[in-house]
Amino acid sequence: MGDRGAKIINQWKNAPVREERCYEPIANCLIRALIVPKIYFERIWPRSNHSKIDIVAVDRAGTGDIHVVEVCRTLKEALTKGVENISKVPAHYRWVGFQGEGLLPYDEEAELKLLSEEPLLPESGMGRIGVIEVIRMAGNDLGANIKVKAERFKAENISMLIEEFVNHEKADIEFKE
Image (cartoon, rainbow, N blue to C red; front, side, top):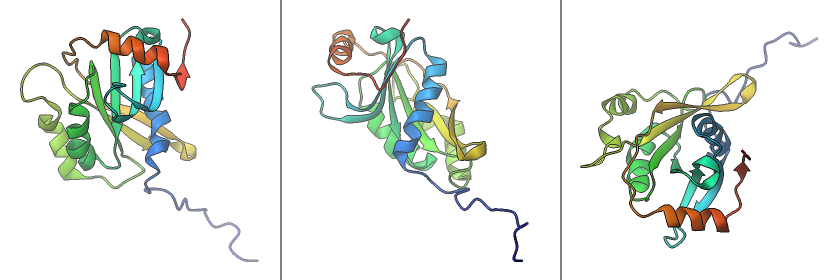
Protein backbone atom coordinates (compact mmCIF):
# COMPACT_ATOMS: atom_id res chain seq x y z
CA MET A 1 0.00 0.00 0.00
CA GLY A 2 2.90 2.34 -0.48
CA ASP A 3 4.52 4.50 2.16
CA ARG A 4 1.49 6.40 3.55
CA GLY A 5 2.97 6.58 7.03
CA ALA A 6 6.21 8.20 5.84
CA LYS A 7 7.00 11.58 7.34
CA ILE A 8 6.37 14.47 4.96
CA ILE A 9 9.57 16.43 4.55
CA ASN A 10 9.33 20.16 4.02
CA GLN A 11 11.27 20.68 0.80
CA TRP A 12 11.40 24.44 1.44
CA LYS A 13 13.22 24.20 4.78
CA ASN A 14 16.50 26.12 4.59
CA ALA A 15 15.51 27.67 1.27
CA PRO A 16 15.48 31.40 0.61
CA VAL A 17 12.31 33.32 -0.20
CA ARG A 18 11.64 36.34 -2.42
CA GLU A 19 12.92 39.49 -0.73
CA GLU A 20 9.45 41.05 -0.97
CA ARG A 21 8.13 38.30 1.34
CA CYS A 22 10.48 39.67 4.00
CA TYR A 23 8.79 43.09 4.03
CA GLU A 24 5.80 42.15 6.19
CA PRO A 25 7.75 40.30 8.92
CA ILE A 26 10.22 43.18 9.11
CA ALA A 27 7.34 45.68 9.23
CA ASN A 28 5.74 43.69 12.07
CA CYS A 29 9.06 43.72 13.91
CA LEU A 30 9.24 47.52 13.58
CA ILE A 31 5.59 47.85 14.65
CA ARG A 32 6.49 46.10 17.92
CA ALA A 33 9.33 48.60 18.47
CA LEU A 34 7.59 51.83 17.42
CA ILE A 35 4.64 53.90 18.67
CA VAL A 36 1.73 54.14 16.18
CA PRO A 37 3.88 53.82 13.04
CA LYS A 38 2.98 54.28 9.40
CA ILE A 39 4.71 51.69 7.21
CA TYR A 40 5.40 52.11 3.49
CA PHE A 41 6.75 49.45 1.11
CA GLU A 42 9.01 50.27 -1.85
CA ARG A 43 8.80 54.06 -1.74
CA ILE A 44 11.08 56.80 -2.92
CA TRP A 45 12.65 58.56 0.06
CA PRO A 46 13.30 61.41 0.13
CA ARG A 47 10.88 62.27 -2.64
CA SER A 48 13.48 64.36 -4.49
CA ASN A 49 16.08 61.57 -4.39
CA HIS A 50 14.59 58.96 -6.77
CA SER A 51 16.00 56.13 -4.63
CA LYS A 52 13.48 53.42 -3.83
CA ILE A 53 13.68 52.23 -0.23
CA ASP A 54 12.34 48.75 0.59
CA ILE A 55 10.61 49.80 3.83
CA VAL A 56 10.03 53.28 5.23
CA ALA A 57 8.45 53.64 8.68
CA VAL A 58 7.39 56.95 10.20
CA ASP A 59 6.73 56.78 13.92
CA ARG A 60 3.99 58.49 15.96
CA ALA A 61 1.31 58.42 13.27
CA GLY A 62 3.59 60.07 10.76
CA THR A 63 4.85 62.95 12.89
CA GLY A 64 7.93 61.35 14.43
CA ASP A 65 11.22 59.76 13.52
CA ILE A 66 11.80 58.09 10.17
CA HIS A 67 13.20 54.57 9.89
CA VAL A 68 14.48 53.17 6.57
CA VAL A 69 15.21 49.51 5.80
CA GLU A 70 17.23 47.90 3.02
CA VAL A 71 16.25 44.22 2.63
CA CYS A 72 19.01 41.90 1.46
CA ARG A 73 19.19 38.19 0.78
CA THR A 74 22.11 37.22 3.04
CA LEU A 75 23.76 38.63 6.15
CA LYS A 76 26.99 39.08 4.18
CA GLU A 77 25.14 41.13 1.56
CA ALA A 78 23.38 43.14 4.30
CA LEU A 79 26.71 44.01 5.96
CA THR A 80 28.28 45.12 2.69
CA LYS A 81 25.92 46.32 -0.04
CA GLY A 82 22.99 46.92 2.30
CA VAL A 83 24.98 49.01 4.77
CA GLU A 84 26.61 50.97 1.95
CA ASN A 85 23.23 51.79 0.36
CA ILE A 86 21.32 52.65 3.53
CA SER A 87 24.19 54.78 4.89
CA LYS A 88 23.49 57.35 2.17
CA VAL A 89 19.80 57.74 3.05
CA PRO A 90 18.79 60.64 5.31
CA ALA A 91 16.93 59.13 8.28
CA HIS A 92 16.87 59.10 12.07
CA TYR A 93 17.22 55.29 12.11
CA ARG A 94 18.69 53.02 9.45
CA TRP A 95 18.27 49.26 9.23
CA VAL A 96 19.29 46.31 7.08
CA GLY A 97 17.31 43.08 6.94
CA PHE A 98 18.41 39.64 5.81
CA GLN A 99 17.16 36.07 5.48
CA GLY A 100 18.50 34.03 8.36
CA GLU A 101 17.53 31.03 10.44
CA GLY A 102 15.54 28.43 8.54
CA LEU A 103 15.89 30.29 5.24
CA LEU A 104 19.61 30.26 4.45
CA PRO A 105 22.59 28.38 5.92
CA TYR A 106 24.43 29.90 8.88
CA ASP A 107 27.38 32.07 7.76
CA GLU A 108 29.94 32.06 10.56
CA GLU A 109 32.20 34.65 8.89
CA ALA A 110 29.33 37.13 8.46
CA GLU A 111 28.09 36.49 12.02
CA LEU A 112 31.56 37.29 13.39
CA LYS A 113 31.63 40.49 11.35
CA LEU A 114 28.19 41.37 12.76
CA LEU A 115 29.42 40.78 16.32
CA SER A 116 32.19 43.32 15.75
CA GLU A 117 29.55 45.91 14.71
CA GLU A 118 32.31 47.61 12.68
CA PRO A 119 30.33 47.72 9.40
CA LEU A 120 27.31 49.20 11.22
CA LEU A 121 29.03 52.30 12.59
CA PRO A 122 29.64 55.53 10.68
CA GLU A 123 33.20 56.75 10.18
CA SER A 124 32.39 59.59 12.58
CA GLY A 125 29.45 60.91 14.54
CA MET A 126 26.51 59.27 16.19
CA GLY A 127 24.33 56.36 15.11
CA ARG A 128 24.46 52.65 14.39
CA ILE A 129 22.69 50.77 11.62
CA GLY A 130 20.32 48.16 13.02
CA VAL A 131 20.03 44.59 11.78
CA ILE A 132 16.80 42.60 11.45
CA GLU A 133 16.84 38.85 10.76
CA VAL A 134 13.91 37.25 8.93
CA ILE A 135 13.38 33.67 10.12
CA ARG A 136 11.22 30.70 9.17
CA MET A 137 8.82 29.83 11.96
CA ALA A 138 6.51 26.89 12.59
CA GLY A 139 3.94 26.39 9.86
CA ASN A 140 6.30 27.88 7.24
CA ASP A 141 5.41 31.40 8.39
CA LEU A 142 8.01 34.14 8.35
CA GLY A 143 8.91 36.22 11.37
CA ALA A 144 11.61 38.74 12.18
CA ASN A 145 13.80 39.62 15.14
CA ILE A 146 16.09 42.52 15.85
CA LYS A 147 19.67 41.23 16.05
CA VAL A 148 21.26 44.66 16.55
CA LYS A 149 19.15 47.63 17.58
CA ALA A 150 19.57 50.77 15.47
CA GLU A 151 20.88 53.87 17.20
CA ARG A 152 19.79 57.36 16.25
CA PHE A 153 21.66 59.19 13.50
CA LYS A 154 21.80 62.96 13.38
CA ALA A 155 19.38 63.83 10.59
CA GLU A 156 19.25 67.55 10.09
CA ASN A 157 16.39 69.39 8.44
CA ILE A 158 14.27 66.42 7.43
CA SER A 159 11.09 67.20 9.37
CA MET A 160 9.62 69.04 6.37
CA LEU A 161 10.60 66.14 4.08
CA ILE A 162 8.84 63.70 6.43
CA GLU A 163 5.71 65.86 6.51
CA GLU A 164 5.64 66.13 2.71
CA PHE A 165 6.21 62.37 2.35
CA VAL A 166 3.38 61.46 4.77
CA ASN A 167 1.00 63.94 3.10
CA HIS A 168 1.63 62.57 -0.40
CA GLU A 169 2.01 58.81 0.21
CA LYS A 170 -0.64 56.37 1.39
CA ALA A 171 0.71 54.02 4.04
CA ASP A 172 0.62 50.28 3.39
CA ILE A 173 0.19 49.64 7.12
CA GLU A 174 -1.29 52.33 9.35
CA PHE A 175 -2.59 52.43 12.90
CA LYS A 176 -4.82 55.13 14.31
CA GLU A 177 -4.18 56.53 17.78
